[in-house]
Each structure stands twice: as C-alpha cells, then as structure tokens.
Length: 525
Image 1 (spheres, rainbow, N blue to C red):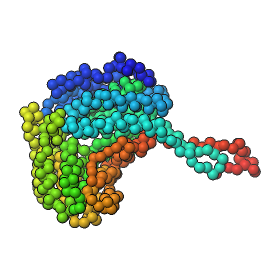
Image 2: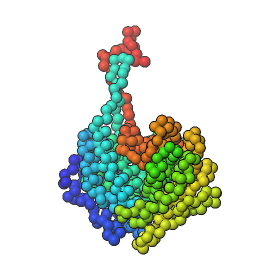
Image 3: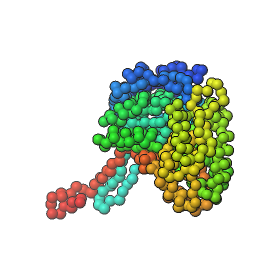
Image 4: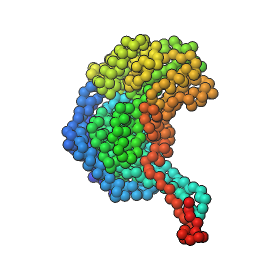
C-alpha cells in the first residue's frame, strides 16, 4: 500500500515493520523505543531513557524514551491541532470507517510481530497472548461498523417541531493503559475514540510500551492523519502531566485503585469526562451441584491465566461446604500440574509476574496470610522455571490458601498475582453476602447446574460482569467496567462508542414564524 485515504505518511516513506526499532535479536530489541508524536518517531525525549526488562529472564529487553512535561505538551498540541483542523474530526463516517478497517487488516497481517513483542514485554505465555489478541482487529472493525450504522434519535414533539439528536467528538482524549493487556485494553477505548473523530494521546505502562508505539505507526500507515494518535512513554509523572493538561477533554484510565483516585483529583477542577477501570477482587461462587471437574478447570484458568495479573482474575473462591474439601484437593492437584517456564514456548502454562517487586509482594502476601491463620495448600514461593536462561526471571509458584474468611486481609484485598484464597459457605444467601462484602465490583462468576440459581445469583452479585460456568470470556460488543472501588464508566460496546462523543439535541420549528408578542401569538413554553 503506497496511498493513503487521508493526507498522511505513505508506506513508501515510512515502512511500518520498522525492524530497526521493533526487531528482536537474541531476546532483545534492536532499537531504542521512541515516542510517537504527530506521525513521527521522536527520540531522544527530554526525560532521558528507561530500561525495559524481560520478566521471563530478568535481563534487559531494551530501552525506551522517557517523556517529560514538554514532550507531553507537544503531544497534546499535536492532537489538538489535528482535531481543530477537522482533517479527522470532520471526515465522513465512511472515510473514518475505511481507515479503521485498514488498521484492523494491518493488525491481522502483522499479528505475529505483535504477539512476540507483547510476550517479551509482560511475560504472558504465547498461547494466552495469541488467543487473546486474535480478537484485537475485531474491536476496530466493530467500531467501524457502529460508525456506519449507529442512528440518531428522532423524538416526538407536542408542537410543530422536528427534534433529533446529533453526536460530535469530544476533542483530545488521554488513554492510560496497564502492562497486563496492553493492546486489548487499549482497543476497548482507542477504537471508539478514533471512530468518533477524536484525537488521542496514549500513555502505555512503563513496563510494556513497545506494541503501543508500533500500533500508532500502523495507524498512520492505515491512513490516520498525523497528530490524531500520539504516544508518550514513562511513569506516573507522565500520566499526571497528561491528565492535568486542560486541553484534554476525556480521560480513560486502567490501573490500580490508588492511581484512579489520583486521576479523579487531577480532573476535579474541570468538567472532564472520566472513565476508570480499576482494581478487582473477583469472587467465584461454586455450588455443590456444579460439575466439579469443569469447575476446577475453570477456576484454575480464571485464577492463573496471565500469572493472576488480571483485574478480573478469580482471587476469592467461595465453595459450598458439601464439596469444599474435594474441590480444594482437586484444585491443588491441577495447580501443581501447570508447566512453568519460557512464555515463548507453546508448552508453557504459567509465565512470570511482571517484576521482582511484584514477585516479592506475592510471596509476602502468602506469609502474612499464613500468619493470620490461613492454611497454605500449595505454592507460596518463587518457582524454578527449569531453564538456566530463565533462572533470573520473576516466577512464582501458583499459590492456593484455604481457611480464609471475611475480615482477613487476603479475603478483602487484591494481591494481583498467581494467588487464590478459598472460603467455605453453607447456603446461597451466605455466599451472596460474602461476595458482596467486597469493596470491589468488577467481575464475578457462578458455577452451578441449576438454571434458576445461575440467573438468580448472577443478578444479585455486585459486579460489572458476571460469568456463569465460565470466566474471562469477552466479546467486542460487551460493555466492560465496574463500580465501587473498581471504577466508573464503560469500555467497549455501544456504551464506550457513545461516551467518546457529545450529544446535542436539535429542535427545528416547522411552522411559519409567529409573532409571540401579539395577542394571537403562542409561546413555545
């Protein structure tokens, strides 16, 4: 492809594989990962550089530019200039949809490169990464389809008026993403922001910035005008500089609850749209009529996928008394069978956690739990990956603790690692009360063979999403987000599409103009 739908950078001048930056040799990046501003790589940044670590080996993966306040301001300026120009914000729905579909096609075409870079960055086993990111292009296709098919409303009028709604983009949007699902979580907001005609500045996790920068370059190759999609890299101070900029009209933040509260403070003095997907502490309720084999396999997957580093990881398992002991034993056996090692191997079930600090936090949480009276069923320490090349990686044994109860720290708070606690309940009402006692309300799951109980309990659990006899299942059309300390607003689905726009009502008088100041004139209200 050498042409572009809208003015941009042609692939002849800007080949999007960028092997000099994103190529991998000997387990390391060949180049220095830059910022991406106004359709071009920017290096060096004013903030210096940061080492990237491969969590599977504990060794250097490469380096990334660190942005500072000046770099952030330049990215916001580029986004605002592009927005005000109308080159994207006022482009036709058809033209924007074509670009989004081209981006989806490029994502599909170069998915293997994205798989590799994401696995090297966060240590998720490649089988997981491939399964998850197989949906990535669909978010952009779905947003494009909504762009072409979403209708405005026409409302009834009591008088001679035609009334309808019209939507317009909000402006510059800041999107801040975490390390655990860099591309998937970004897609749940970016696709809808772009579809509506907004400009964006993305701040990826300092642990996993590489694929986000690559995606921005791909988007320009797809026809997105320069300045519409910008990437600034760095830590919390970069997020703060971005969110504090008064030109930012909407913020989408995914991260910890503490970070979300900071976002709320930074935007409290101005009317900024704010969507936050924060911490989770997902309860899974297993009733004694559940298919036990299916429930054990499902809970193992729900608890240990991504080494437990997902916001909806099954972290508190509530098991009915009649099957409690057998369930614990079967879960122990299943967890101990997981193959720990190189995430690039198709044989690996469990990869490392993201950092040495995260590994220490999981081990420390285990020790505190045992001190508080919980029983260690299995795990609880660093794991040996079985390869000298990975001996310095940040591996943790899958950890299960039983005997937990409300009021214990491990029952009430998220650990964010391959760490699960099990508690016993006697009846349905007790299970619901235990689950709903959490300060979080992002996800939940129910395992039962009773259709009536499945619906009844799912509708009573505090959660933004609830699975029945399943976990982690997502579709691009499903709205995503919780409440309580788990955040506010929704990502994905038509809810996210609409939230990246302003809605106005348009009221058109269809009768001849009256003189409202005569005795025969009839006022509107």
